[in-house]
Length: 155
Image 1: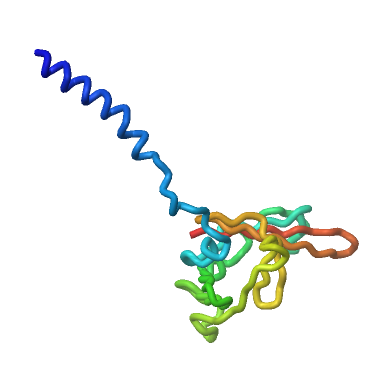
Image 2: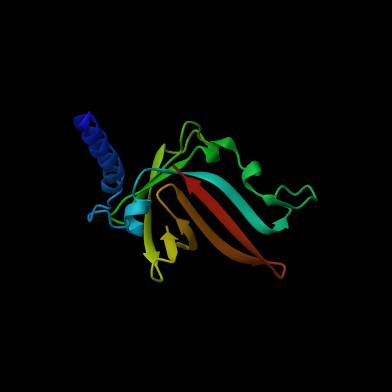
């Protein structure tokens, strides 16, 4: 009987200690750099908005959700960033123009303390970058109105 109680006490102690040991942070688990985050996997567009709303399909109605108006042949495109400052675009399963190559090369780099990203000579604000989400934005002026476009990508 005493052995059973000791065994039960030992199991309770182990049950209380093991979860803490399992949660112990590995000293090698340092946060990933932005370069590590962006170069892991391929990125596919998941959202595209414009603010303020604009007449994006020229029907007289203004919209903020540009993504709904983008052709499927663009929505299936993916971009893979590489650590050497190059990227590969892939037209995905459907191409908008059959004569276009399936893949194409791009250049990229971070700028302004990694708050901006340059992609083939165009600069975008880096709004968010996590292991699964990339959000960029840019602004332009048209007829005295400043519009901000934001594009999200996931993988």
